[in-house]
Amino acid sequence: MDTMLKKKEKYNVAIMGATGAVGTQFLSILDERNFPIDELRLLASERSKGKIITFRGKEHKVQVAGENSFSGIDIVLASAGASRSKEFLPAAAGAGAVCVDNSSAFRMDEEVPLVVPEVNPHAVKTHKGIIANPNCSTIQMVLPLSVAHKAAGLKRVVVSTYQSVSGAGQNNILELERQVKGLCEKASHYSAGEHTVSPCEVNKFPYQIAYNLIPQIDVFLENNYTKEEMKMVEETRKILEIPDLAVTATCVRVPVYYAHSESVNIETQKKIFAKELAELLRKFPGVTVVDDPEKAQYPMPLNAEGKDDVFVGRIRNDESVDNGINMWVVSDNLRKGAALNTIQIAELLI
Image (cartoon, rainbow, N blue to C red; front, side, top):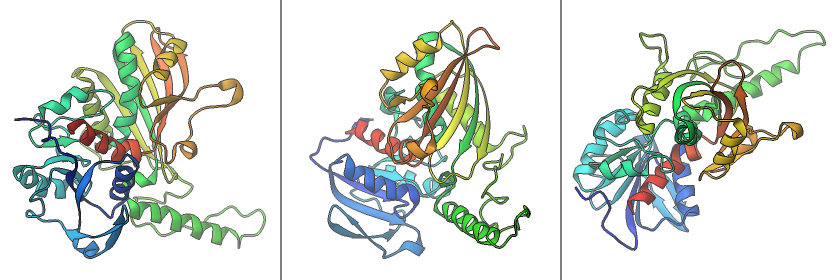
């Protein structure tokens, strides 16, 4: 099939999950990047039906997503969860739309390209109506990995993630907010020397997330890795087109509102020094290097929030292995990790 959309001045765009955390970012970034939109169709679940959202000065009423919601649509940007994507996107593609899906529904489907535009833009040409957006934690990691692979060949990747609550959705942001507020109020009643913290209400996460770390994101699989960890393994191999790459991951939820951080250790086929890699990263689109130990400059989620780039720092040779490098990688998970990458894929199409 012709993978490029028919050339138009403007395109009819539908957003699935328009009222969610990523859907809201879709609208913001479409406006920021002046994406050429004719008709905008906002789709969500029944509970958001009739909600009014203003975009570029015009009010749009949210509709309930259904199989007949995509007539005349050129591009679907979807972030409504895997089950909704599986239910509706085949029908949308059948109606002639090209769907860019932010869920996990189609990522490992052999007929669906998994795309990070700075890394594998050529993959978009193989689509059959659906293109998958990778997991947020995978997206930010594969940018520096692709640079290292091109320079020295990747042999092994070990990643530990520190993922913000916004990666789990709007309700989880609110849960952290409620817990922090509640615990602060309780703490104000303690006398000096008391350190016992009363438990707070837990709904969305398996345990209290405020002032805590939870080393479980998604469900555990038979190999005792979580589903999130195996996403990073499998998606990295697919995007980089290295099916036998040795990758292992540990994914941890942390009490940060926005932006994911990752400690990434790589082993390369050839020797590359940290300074060489840092210079290559400085030239790579979508990456900003923040790495000055003498001035205590390194990426932090607080500084990455609301930014488009992937920030890389703490770049240093791993002294425990001949060809090893450590990096600290931080990115706004709702922007580059989700909405921005999705829209960049749509820009490749037009």
